[in-house]
Length: 404
Image 1 (cartoon, rainbow, N blue to C red):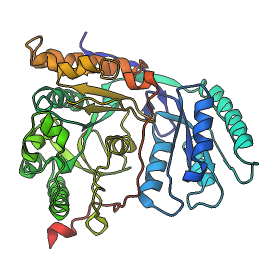
Image 2 (tube, helix red, strand yellow):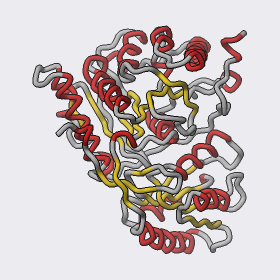
Image 3 (spheres, rainbow, N blue to C red):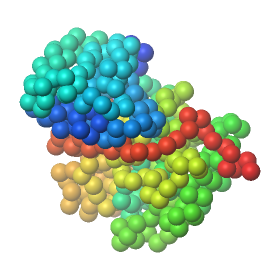
């Protein structure tokens, strides 16, 4: 049976979207409340209780929009917001947003609840009540047309552009053809290929947005005199940013690009989308484009990705909060060395053990299983990494830099 014809049960949300997980999200609104929030999640003893938050006590639109998008994410069923009491991001209005989405929600201040011990006890009581409520969530059929899947690279080597990213691109083509949604990012890893991306634009507006996004990333790289290529990439057999870019871009497949998304923007309609996570020109500073893989994964998840692909030739151990991560490598040696962490070996195609079509079908089957509830390896191990930095982006795509 072709995986495209598979169905599984999802969790119906008030906005009509369907989730593949039904998680309680514990949010801390400042670093000072992080320990209490993390202990609530840890002591709950339930892998479906997760903790995320923002460390800053001053305003940051990027972080606020990120937290709101995670509250609204279809994989999230309930929300508990924990604040200290004097920070900018207020837990009450985060809980109110969750209630507007039809999700069980609650909040409290540690300052008003007696401190650490009593706050953890209160939070655990709330979370256990929420877990009981979530047992009543309506279940509905899901197919590939309901899925949003994001992809990024992490620790590329020479096999990434030959196998790892290639199978993702082939998968994305089939996902889009089935009526689903695919998101790829890392425009700073597309240096030298802007003309190829703009040629695939679905509309004239999409072409302008792609060109502006590419030009912004290029100017950033020039300004800091650093491109998104690392010693690990060189050790893995890559020689230039252009060579790495070819591998990074091939994960987008071959379908028309519908447009450019900003971080935390809901996908307007199905199809293939480019995610712009590079800060806009007047907020540029060194190291702010892609500080680590988990920042990129959270950016993809903020746009509604049910599952994310992390393609790495070198290997990685991370997972993420909210959405499962499927870790893919084109290097069979890496897969064998990191069998506890890597989910999918695309290197078999380089050894002649299968063809690209067979490999793509195998990845589709794995996605079906994970979407139906089978934990990815990072989920089973309890990896819940995330990163929400201080960052700045305009709500709309900025074209000023390339219109001058």
